[in-house]
Image (tube, rainbow, N blue to C red):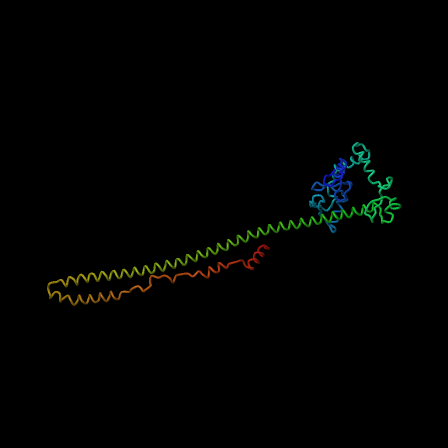
Length: 340
């Protein structure tokens, strides 16, 4: 008994298990020979496989594909269609042996089950009557006496085999519809996986391009920085050289003044008036020329040492770098690159 439902559960026999293993997943009956084996190792009746193949490839010219109804493996066929698939002789032999044993009734364990199966299609109201019709109104199988004299006399009925074939076809169509839906889901999932892969590839491409762009900017900044530093150094060297040359001129003028100062001092210290007067006029003239030369010497201009004019205003560049962002043109270029 099933604890959850409270219903008596009949144990599954070895015979029923064998029948399930030997049943086609399309027609739901025992395999009809010849039995073909698919590349995924599942089996189908050749007729069912051909029906499935033709429904998938209505306009085929050479070859075609269909999916295994058991595992959804895509089977690719050549121009021979399902007739190019290998027969599963082992399954066919097992079916022959199983049918022979069923006919002989040699299995002792299956005999009671056979009797039970023989009683199952009997009508509950008329034990001697087999269930051979289907009440369409009540949606239940019944027997002929129930239709003539029983509760189903006013109902619409149909032959049991006809309803069986119809519902079997509907179930097969439902299986096909479900298989098609599963194939669409698998295709969509595969497409999404491919899209994820392309997104990752495009992200890596954009990271590489962005790195190359900024590396180029860094290189340009370093190059421009070097050029400006060279200008600062050149002006520094020119000014220092000019001041040193001017200092050398001052040094020479100072030496001349010191020599003249010494001579003047010696003349003043001379004891003879005649000797002093003879040299005084000449010495005074030399002193005036020396003083005039010293006064005429060039002096550095005020603020000559300043180098503020070499300052660089980076505010505009900083604003541009701060506002730097991706553009629509960049996205279009990336899409063009992907298409290439």
